[in-house]
Each structure stands twice: as C-alpha cells, then as structure tokens.
Image 1 (cartoon, rainbow over the protein chains, first blue to last red):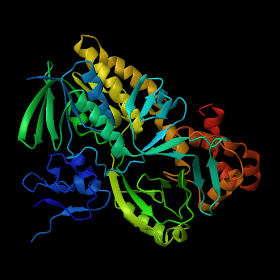
Image 2 (cartoon, rainbow over the protein chains, first blue to last red):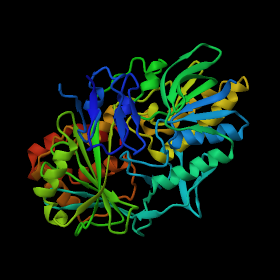
Image 3 (cartoon, one colour):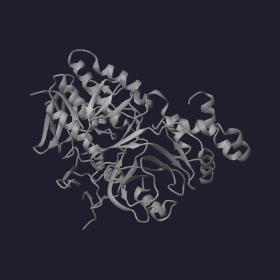
Image 4 (cartoon, one colour):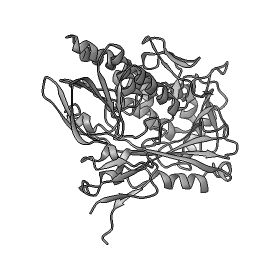
Amino acid sequence: MAHVISDECVGCGTCATFCPVGAISQGEDGYYDVDPAVCVDCGSCEKACPVQAIAAEEKG
Amino acid sequence: MMKDLLIVGAGPAGLLAGYTAAQKGLNVTIVDMKRDITTVNRACSAQFVLDEGYEGETLKAGDGKLVFTKNGFEVPYRGKLVPILHNYMYSPKGHRVAFEYEDLRPTALKFDKKELLRGLLEQCEKAGVEIRTNTMALKGRDNGKSVVLTLRGDRGQYELEAKKLVIAEGVNRRLTSIFGLNKGYQCMGIPLTCEYTLEGTEGIPHNSWIQYYGDVYHPFMEIMVGESTESDDALEFTVMGLGDMRPAAFFEKLVKDSPLTPNLRNARIVQRKGCGCCNYLSLSKPYHGNVLAIGDSAAHIEVINQGAMMCGYHAGHAVAEELDGRNGFEAYAKWWNGAFEFNCENPMEQLKLYGALSIKRTLADDEIDYLFSMLADEKHCGHFNQYEVPKNFWTDVLKHDAEIRKDRPALYDKLAAIRTYKEQGKF
C-alpha cells in the first residue's frame, strides 16, 4: 500500500518537501510521483497537498 | 573530492549563496529536487517591494538588473516588470481603502519569477557552480570536520561531502530539522494556498495588489488579487485554506456566490499553482556546527524573493569567512536578526494587528463595511509591505476613535487591544 498522486497535481512539489522518507520525486512531465516501494503511508503529503491530489491507494 | 560548500535548494537564496561563494573562489555544488529549476509551479506573488528601508534595504529595479542599494550588490533581471501603483483593501459591500503615493509612483513591481531564476542560474553556471537537478537530499550528518549528505538523483543514491552546508530548502524545514537547527520550534499549522491565474475578469483593477475582506469572500482569510506577467489581461487570485477546508472549495464559492461573482462570470483559469507551508517562528540562531539555514528555511512566514537574495549574498560571504578561520556564521546571524521585521518585533503582536481583519477574524462583515467606508475617501500612506500596511490602516482607523465610540460601542470595545498597542507606542 502507498499513497498516490492524481491528475489534479499542479506540480508545486509541496508533497516532496513533507515526505519524511524521500519517496516523492518529480517526473519527466513535471508532476510528482510517489515511489510505492519507499512510501510508508504516513499521510503527510496528503495533508499538505493544496489541491487535494493525494490519497491512500484503495485496496484492489 | 570534498566540496567547499554544498547548498540544498536552488531558489533565489540558494542560487545567490552559490554565486557569491564561487566568486570568492569556493568550490560549490547546489542540489535541487526539481528537474528544471526555472519552472515555478509553487504559488508566489512574485513582487519586488520598493518601500525604503524594507528588510533593511531599498531596492531599485530596471536596466536589466536589480540593485540592492544598501547591501551593496546587484543581480541580473531582464524579465517583465509590471508597476503596482495601488494597494487596495475592499470590504464586503465594496468600500475601498487605497494605500498609494500622491504621485502614483510604484510601491512594488510584479516580476516574472522564471526570468529571475533564469538570470540567477546563468550567473551561477558562469561562475563555475555545479548544479545537480532532480536530486533529493534524504539525510545527512555533521561530523565536526565536514558535512555528509545522502542524496538520491539520476545516478541513484550516494553521499556527498563538503566542508560547509547551506540549507535553502524553503519553509518546510526538513533538513533544517535533521541537522538540529529546528530544535524547540513547533509547526503552528499548515496553511494551504492555491493561486489561480484568470483571464477574462471584468471590472477588477490592474496595476494593483488587492485584498478582499469579509465572510462573503472567505470565512477566515482575505482573498488576494495581484498582477500577472502571463498576459496583459491576466490576474492572479490567491485563495487560502487549512486542513479539510480546502482552497478549491473557497475559490468555487468566490466564483459562484460572492460579491465578485459578476466580475468572474466570463473568467477562465489559465494556470493553477499551489503550496503548503509549515508555519514556524523564525530561527534566532540559524546555524549549528558546519550548517547554516537561510531564507524561508529559517524565517517566520516568508523573507520574500528580495530577502532570499540578501540571505544568499550574506551566506556566501559567511561561508568564505568561516573557511578563512573567521566566525562568518555568527556575523550572518547578527545581520539576519537585524534585517528582518519578524526578528525585530514580537511576531505574535504583528499577527494580532493583521488578525483583526483576517486570521481569527474578530470583525463582522458590517463592521468591516463601517470602518472601510470611513477610510474610503481619505489618502493613505503608500507603503506596500506586510508590516507597515496594518500599522497604517489601524493608525488611520484610530483617528476616528471618538466617532466609532459614539456610533458603534461594541466595535469600539473590539478594538481595545489595538488601541492599547497604539498607546504603548508599538506602532
């Protein structure tokens, strides 16, 4: 399980500055992505996202 | 090979620190998590404040450069500059208080942040500063003789060692905390900000910095509207939120159901930016061992772009002095504590001056209408900056104190704290 960033992302990078484990980086398209292998699901990024683009991945 | 200086963050503070240190002959590397450091998707009003003495400086702009007349340096800037002539505050019913100069000379200049960063980056590259983009600083340690950072970038995860580290990471103090500089400081909340660039608005003034106050616009903050460098028609709307109260919901209400609805009916969004910022008090001692935190990494709320460049300039000198065996970081801290208003005053008192109108608002909409209608036909001092405007506003309100006491005794009582500050000579 990990947090995921949706198409609502504006590329501001706030989430990456809040992530305590460095799981978030900027993709080649300029928007940000969470590396599920590193994410610890703490939710810090979700709370800090100004456009509500981040949520915990739903169990599939 | 060990670097002289490693800088985390390639914003205006980090780039100026890198350039200044390189000019002093130091071997400098800057890392930044962004892929293209000139692309700005983070909300930023990007205005140069021209008030004399603001942040201990009087800035002059034009002819392809910005001159810091008191600190004694200049930086290249060849982008657009839009003069800001009016600082307007609107009440719910549209009473307007205008802060401007009699001769309408600009009080601020809207600039293109991409162009500013491009100029600062070019300057760094020419001076031989190494820039590593797409590089995240994960953790680090100060071993007394040097600083070692663990980085992750295009070449995977690796360590980089330098004699000194300058943290210019911005407001959220991740590395600042890792290196112990933020010990004893608490995050007092995470305000969320969305900035919408709109085209096709009607009847909203240009060449202005505008704040709309009252519940009809936003329940606890002002709506801010400023110029844009995107096009002649564009304006930037800044809407704040907190926790589950998201900026987007407030923006939607502003468009669909507020006094600005008629002005926005044909408007379209051409760009969205955002940010979330931990609100900390300023670091009174922004260094520890071999590490110095500069710019917003150490500030209360913000140093704004010009303050960030001053921090970078002084930090570059401070590191060179340290490597020369002198106490440059202490000299930097002395400058830092003297230059910025948030270090000179009790920041909580400052917040109370703002607070009556916005954060933790105590005035009802009809009270804001009443006060603004009294001030609407008067001339008000042209100062632009966030410290002087509330002081000037309340000074001018208190000139009507006898009238307020007679007309609105309940409102008169609400202004007791502000009256006391004034009597104590705090503004």
